Image (spheres, rainbow, N blue to C red):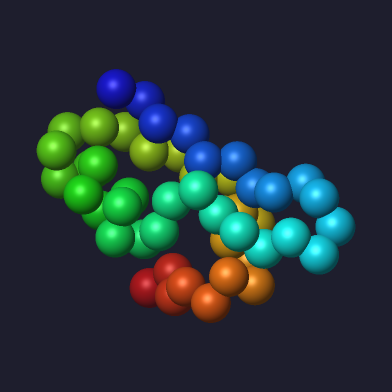
Length: 48
């Protein structure tokens, strides 16, 4: 399954639909995940 995560478009909104742990679990289970550049900026999650 292909799963997409777009970035929030509302001003001053930093929520994101997937956490890094969610993405790792989806990939581990054979899914492909596409996260839009900038999604989650300001949310406090580390990308590394």
